[in-house]
Amino acid sequence: MKTVILCGGLGTRLSEETQLKPKPMVEIGGQPMLWHIMKIYERHGFNDFTLALGYKGGVIKDYLLNYHARLSDLTVHLKTGRVDYSNPTAEDWQVSLIDTGTNSMTGGRLLRLKSHLQSTGTFMLTYGDGVSDVDLTALLAFHRGHGKLATVTAVRPSARFGGLHIGGGRVLDFKEKPQSGEGWINGGFFVFEPGVFDYLADDATVLEQAPLETLAAEGQLMAYEHPGYWQCMDTVRDRDALQSAWDSGHAPWIKQVN
Image 1: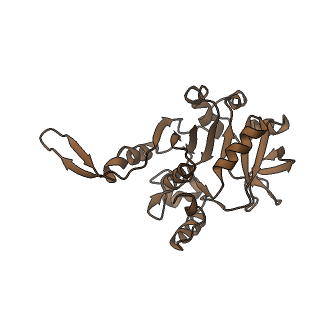
Image 2 (image 1 turned 90 degrees about the vertical axis):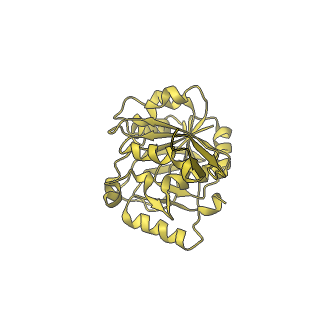
Image 3 (image 1 turned 180 degrees about the horizontal axis):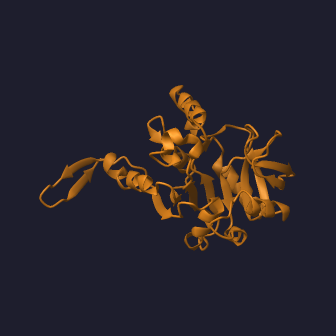
């Protein structure tokens, strides 16, 4: 099963870091946030990734193109240019890196992946700036059990993200970034059926607005309620909190990557 990670945003609220790199490449514990997210999925057996690139996507390409070499012993034949690799420690991942436009919105990025995804069936999707100890195996089982087009992982941090009104496991209403209120919010870690592409119009489509709002209104968006750990990286404060958690040796998402 393919896992999409949205990696193309500008990350303006973390400009101290993102002037030089895309937000998924901001490091926590010496590893890019992107690596942490992929390790969470790997722990549950998902190792086929599609990265929706945009702003400074070349940085991510360079990182992955050189990943195997950085984690291997090398013998370089200078005359021929041949390189022999030995003792590699790289993960067994397949990663597709697809340019989805510098200015595309979240739904637009997903729409640009339609030809890559529509024939593969159910797929997973998350943002390139958040980690969690969500049980992805249970999430997928929940999605397959209800038979709807979409599942969003609902989490309970501060109410500055997309608010969810849930009843009987079904998303009754979806509102992006409410100004006030408490309760479940959009934590990413989605599961989608290919039918979701019918709700996406163009590059300007914001996934968290009309598409998810319409899916909710039609009873096609379900919520997997995750009361455990979830943390995004929107600001320097968020980055520092994640780093502190890592430094403690007890970062909640680490148990997913042992």
